[in-house]
Length: 231
Image 1 (cartoon, rainbow, N blue to C red):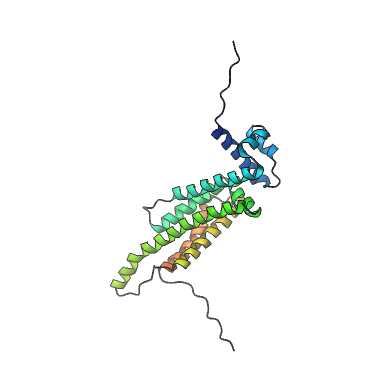
Image 2: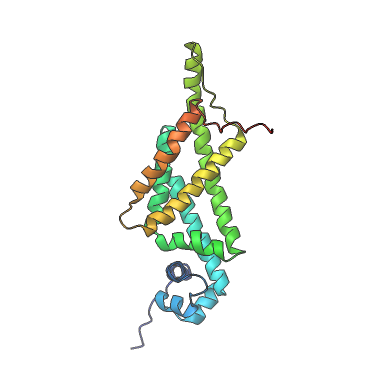
């Protein structure tokens, strides 16, 4: 009888296996310290096969960034149900973000630390992901403003001073940038701090952000003190 041939693993499956190993090594050791030998060994393949599939260490790292960025964006989008009130939408989006980064600390290290500190083209890949998340958060804030509009009209009919939920586009964009930046920093802190859960991290940022957004929607923005006149 002839030798029994083992079934070959499909290329797509093998490639994902290599990317899984690469994300772990890059996330834990850093881009420069990581070696292709380590990645190949963890993936259970030969180093020449890694090069055959993914060309170079730079291309492998770029592929890791793209895959992990897409997974994070999808997790945040999938976590938000548009039929919920605005505060619940934001809460669920934050919860999805912190849950994903907590469950995938190596992935978050690749995106938040490694990709940003090694210049182009890696930083550009992360910037594209971040812009997508900021745009999504911008829509959530705009939804909160639209939700506040009926309350404003009700105040006007009752003879009370209505708040103005029609926030300027620049202000909404700035709020979204600030919220995403805070989430990124808090995720890094939460992953490095034992005992901090994704829910706790999300609640911390929700308390920090939503109270301020609520005041803004209610027409109670904080105003800086007037600058002293030149003497």
